[in-house]
Structures are given as C-alpha cells and as structure tokens.
Image (tube, rainbow over all chains, first blue to last red; front, side):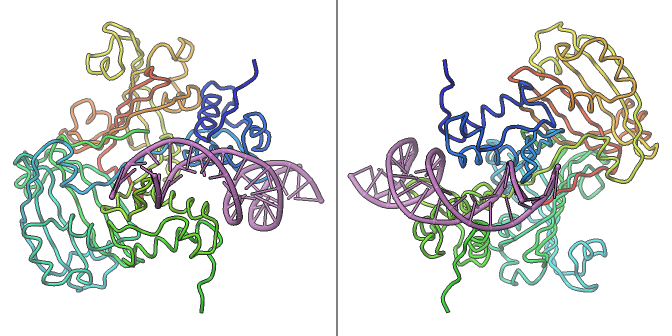
Length: 233
Length: 233
DNA sequence: GAGTGGTCTAGACCACTGG
DNA sequence: CAGTGGTCTAGACCACTCG
C-alpha cells in the first residue's frame, strides 16, 4: 500500500514526532527539507513548515536556513505554567475564597526593594500586606510594593476589600516581568499570618512587573506549608 | 498622513499589542475581525491570522469562531522555563561541576512511588541517589527511581561516574511528563548530604517522565538552601 | 553562490458556534 | 443560518548562512 496523504499540519507534526520518538530520526540528525517532506506527505510546503515550526518552538527541532532541520540533541523541554489570579486559583480548587487586608501605607521602601524597582532613594511607594485564604484556612500572604505613579489615593480605599493582585491585573497593563521561585523558612511574620510553625518550609514566588521599562509593582507571595505548583512538560 | 502598511506578522503583532497596552482595545472588548484588520493594515488575512494566533497563544487574546476575537480579561501570562541538564546548569553559572554516586540498588519501591509510576506492587525498579555539586559545594540531591525496562545491568555501572539525569536525557526518549515545585524542611538525609541544618527550607522539584503512557522514571531533586529559579514573563 | 527555511499573497473551503 | 476563525494550496520572493 502507499502512504495516506497527511492533510493537516497536526498530522504532519504527529508523524514527524513519531519518527523522532522511534529514533528513525536520531538526535543531531538532519531530516529531509520541507519541499521533500511536502512531496512525501502529499501536502503543501507551508503545511510542513507550520508543523516543523511548531516542533521547533517546543524545542524538539533545531532549524537554520541553509543548514536545514535537525533533531535537537537535548530536547530542551520547557515547562510552562500559567499565572492565575489568586482568587481564581482558590476557586478552581473548589474552595471558598477569603481576603483580609493586613496593612496599607505609603512609605520609603527598604534598599533591596528600591533597587528591585529601580527607584531613586527616598521615593515613597505604596506598601500593602494581605492574606488570601481558602475555606478560611490561610493560603498565601501577599507582600506588595506598588509605584505611586499607578495608583491614586482613591484606589487605596479599594484594597480593603479587593486584593491588589486582582486590582492591578484588571486596571494596570504590563508589558514584561521577572518571576522567581524559591523556598524560605517561616519567620514570625509569616508564621503568625499563615498559622504555621516558626521555621516551617514555605514556597515563595517573587514577581516584578513593568510597563515599558518602568516598574509597576514587586510582590512576594508566601504560600502556606504544603503548597506545590503542578505542571506538564 | 496615511498609515504605513504593516507587511509582516511581527509588526502586526506589535501594533495589536500596543493597542492592548494603550487600552485603545480594553480587556473583554471585541476587536475587528481578521478581514477588516487585514484591510486596515494593508496585508493579507493570513498575516493578520498569524499575528493574532500568536497573541492568543500567549494568552493575551481569546478567539472563538463566530464569536470573534476579544482582549483577554485576565492576561494569563505564562512563565516558561527550560529544564536543563544539571551539569550544564552548574557550568552555566561558571562553577566547576562535581558528581558523586551515593547509592544504587534494585529494589521494590515504597507504595507512593509505585503509584506515581503506575507499577504493579512488588515490581523491582532501580533506585539511585546521587549528589551534584558546584565548586565542591553540594548543589542538589537527585533521588531517582527508574523502571527496569529502560536500563540494562551494564548501564548500572555507568552511574558511578555519569549521573542518571544525563544518561537518560541522551539515551531514553520521552514523550510526556509531569513536574511539580514545592518546599520541604530538611530531614536527616537531606541535611547530611547537602551540609545544611536540620529543618532548613529546601526547594524541591519532582518530575515524572513517560514514553507513550509507560513511566520511565520519577525523580526528586532537592536543592541546597538559597536555590531559586529565575525566569521571565 | 546556492540551498534552506521564513514569510507573504490571493483565493478557497471548512469547522465551529452564536443568535 | 451566517459570520467568524482555522487551515490548505500554489506560487513567489526574500534572508540567511554554509561551504
């Protein structure tokens, strides 16, 4: 029998993927060019192009003009995780969402925060601490600094009932950001708010977001013990 | 003056992005359809399509047939991080890489590992513990279980000088996997190997990889105190 | 210089789904 | 049902880069 024609880019992708997994095309090996594959599969070159580009995006192929397409040596798989609004994350778990404002003030940030935000010394910013809970159990502490440029005094009032997390997402657009994951031991501040023991291991996310090079906000999210992020590769 | 024509999908993407960031198109708002945008930008519809699909992939647009394209309410930004071989991660930091095999045996895994790997009870698997170090300082403990199907007895010998992390990447192709990030307190095992205090907060990565539904390996990476993952959104 | 991937175009048909 | 995005095609030109 002759090969069925592959008529869409997903099926071309699947076929190429299976040749990689079966080691018919081994890591580092040059695969046929787009025109040849198009002829073999009985489709247009652009269809093959779409499939191969998709696989290259996923890190399974290395492509270069003139050099051709090769199977990646070390399939650099990338884990991608979405960054949801905390309220939605809690609701998605099937829990009731709760929010408490701990403190809210305008003040001069400590040096490491000022540096992180690229502020000149002695610039006032807004500092907010709050607690998100799931079914009345502490879930995560939000410790946030916001540049004054992006929030009016009126907005400050809102934070009594609406978390800055949520307010910022819907009111201030951002263009870029850094994010870091780490682990810390609970100090008195965290232990008190999260209701855990001093020294407990806590998962932490630090995030800084900017709008065209100007820092909007930097936040540290300190999760209750046992928190984990799950994703797929 | 009249608008310049936007001739490639990247410039269309940029223009659309700037309209989102400038709030000319607000979250939740319906934007013009592809045909209209193509006319406005002076390019083919497929060029607009490519740009909008790319933005939708990044979570900035929601697109549905017939319903049209809307600016995403909560720009679900995704953090993507590549998963390097540990040796390369350490070398990339400019440190000298060191490797020590702690233990290597064939045994019946504890129930939670068997469940994770989808094994029947009492199936023997390979269990390996080893330590990766940077400039002779402990960096991460690798605690790994490997299904016997994928590794011969000869291979076992290799692990004295080559980490299973590295060996697997280059010898066993995988098709899918789960990954999880969390924080734990150092127990005696971890504290001893990493040279840290009992109870120290440690960053942990759990990863399970499969080849066509069959589990290859599951590993827990326990990093020395202070470790953090940095990435960009 | 020449071979490869990257992209654009115009036109077409289809799949999905809202009203 | 009709409007929208999803995709395919054939052909074309270009950008890059290896040899």
